[in-house]
Image (cartoon, rainbow, N blue to C red; front, side):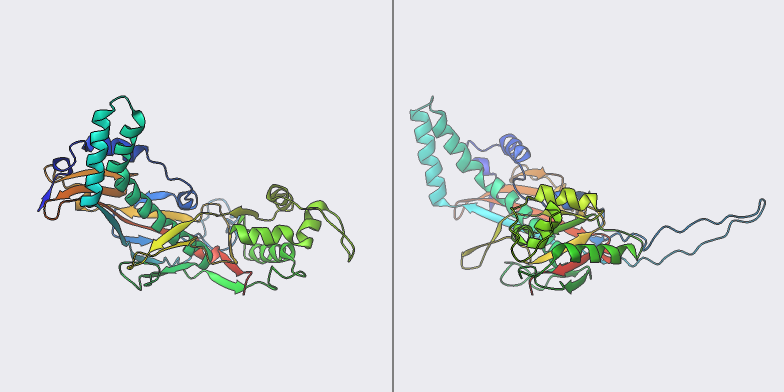
Length: 359
């Protein structure tokens, strides 16, 4: 039987939980920078494809004549069902005994703010943990989309449903040479891909990559010669260059600038083992016509509006993460569950390009 958490932890309150949740920051996760939140009234997502090629010119016509009609390109959207993402954690009897001991310590030391903060931290750590879990899953999905054009759940990266697959069919190809090779020339390749895009009527503005790939680019002798404007030969020794210097030179030449996506997330397997990962397909880079790569489409269900005040406490974080906290009598537990219906969606996938610099 579910009961209100306040019946088990007397200090727990809906108002305090809501205040803590609303003030809780996103931290070092970056997905909303590239995929801002967008409400979707339906349980299905679809991406937006810009019209291919350069702008179509109007015609010069005779006065009094009928305006010539132009054709409309058929834009094929990638569509699918917005997945349900969920995470939960319990305060068990041992945790509740710890809270009880902290409660006794607060009563014995009423002026000790440190002990009181420990009690508050223990009571409300699970709502923050669950919010982190939802955002970490969004981060993983987004980084998979950016580095591979798709994502797929498996037994090694998801504890729920496996074989959830989304593919935005981004053109993907190997670099001319592995960028870790001494004779690779990343700048010449960037120039090549930009010229190919211009031939189709658009141009790339950003290249998104991992920190490891950026380090290879910056160490490359041809990159340093490009930034410093110095010809190289077998005996040339060039100083290191920084990303800011490289981006300034790229922008000056009308080439896409480099953006680095670095964050770390982890996955907990069924056996409790925690595996730290960054979600990025290492060595892959994404060319895009915009710094905004898409949107994080979310929706809400009836669960978001249902109210069982006598059973659970409820808060909604950032309009799309539902956090419920409720108690159990047998065995005695306080459970916190976060739910979201959301997925990052890659826009303009036809005008994006993934290059594998490590193959």
